[in-house]
Amino acid sequence: MKEEKLGKFEYIFNPRTVAVIGASDSDGFSQALMGTKLRDSLFLVNPKYKELHGKRCYASILDIEDGIDYAVIAVPALLVPRVLVECIEKGVKAVHVFTAGFSETGAEERKILEDEVRKIARGKVSLIGPNCMGICCPKSGLSFIPDVLTEEGPVGVISQSGTFAEQFLSIGKLRNVKFSKVISYGNAIGLDCPDFLEYLAHDSETEVIALYMEGTKNGKRLKAAMTEAAELKPVLALKGGVTEHGRRAASSHTGSLAGSPEIWSSLFRQAGVIQVEDFDELLDTTLALSCVPLPSGKGTAIITNSGGFSVLETDLCVKAGLEVPQFTKETIAELRKMVPLAGTSINNPLDAWPIFYNMPGTTGTLADAIKTLSHDKNIHSIVLHFDEVRYLRHVLGEATENFLKELVKIMVQGCRYARDEMGKTIMICVSLDAYSEDEVDRRYHLLAKKAFESEQFPVYPALGASIKALSNLYRYKAQYRNS
Image (cartoon, rainbow, N blue to C red):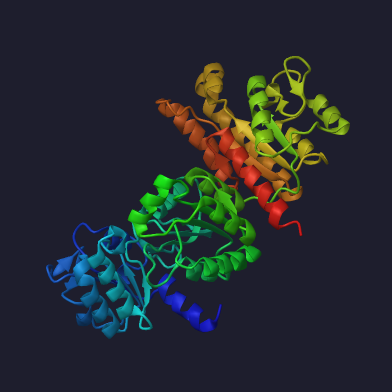
């Protein structure tokens, strides 16, 4: 990407000053930015107010003495052309038009209005939108909803939908995903998905790119941008509008021409992009890509505490294109030294429940077992399934918390060795009954989840999610990173 274009994006993601035009006592942008490091360089504009949120409110952006790098336009659609002209006169570098009510309505007069806005902006200002949430960047403090900024991290998100971007941020924060930039671009009459892809491809702060799109105005350019990005870092894509009804919804949402699902699947495949099927799979796989090494093969070891679940876990892996191979004789011999014979299965999956609890007859810890598996030549990944909170409470009562803390510490130790010393892909499933209303159960599950997350392991609430994400990592490695 040329230096001149990179410079334009600097104003978009790292503005020195920001103005919200159409600010009010309840608008989300003002509230979001007041809680970030941009608070002191934030200017509010609305002729209806003299003061908002303890700050002076200006009648027009032209009344602000300071220069403005980035402006959010949140006024009724019919006022957008006039406000945009004022932004250009002011010398604003980048404008985000939050306002909806343009071509996505299908009304001819609104298509004409959108075209007017496009013509006003062309060549004069970088324009994002309309009909979108704009930009979130934890490093600069730029945000579009309150209380969602996470620590800076490696994940870049490009979303045609504003609500999708909001949800990815909010749920991602709960799942320990850390973001570099999150972009909602809407109707894309100025900057479009390929522009942001080209930028994130060369952004040193972004290591993984997640896409949500409903359509494109220029398939050839989009393919070129995806191909360039995918050659440099993992790119995941979720395509909205793959059914007839979904395509109709996409047209009314962002005015997109959705195209056939077969064409899109072919486009992603040719560009080296991993296509996923839904929101959860996109988030789950993005999480894994951001914090674990890619698996060097299909061989997956499962550590569980249930013979019944081990059968289901094996089926899930095989259906997802992975393998659950037998351990080598050397591995079995080492494990047998640690685990008593009765009631256990020293196979793959490893059902060695006594070692979870230091039962009589065990001579090693769960960390020792994990380390042993990590040396097995047939094993490239390890899935650790932990679902024992209720059992521990039943057996240990008030002593549960201290025991759980020590057990989790041991599990983390083994997983850290397998990942950092042996290069294995480690996936963690900490299950919680979705219908449980027991606050103690929830607190203990959170304790385990946080312990793994603090060491940057991907943690999943359901086994199927962890295995599907692992499968996508293997698919990416096999298809695009083995050459």
